[in-house]
Length: 76
Image (tube, rainbow, N blue to C red; front, side, top):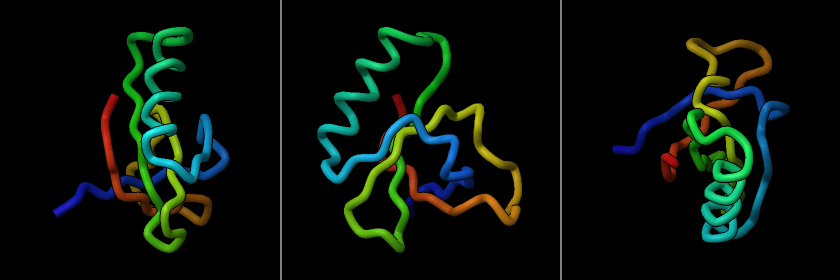
């Protein structure tokens, strides 16, 4: 069973169609920007094969009108 997390899509650091590229960019971004903040690679089940990067701290604790459920693919 995968972990589901809520985010506002406007808070994403980047969107990618290739999972490996999203992971690579996430690692590069973390090295250059904020090494102490955790990142997650997520995908929206309704948008097949589209991945986004978010800071874990930007997650929403509960459903709001601006939040969307994402499945966590990888934690960085």
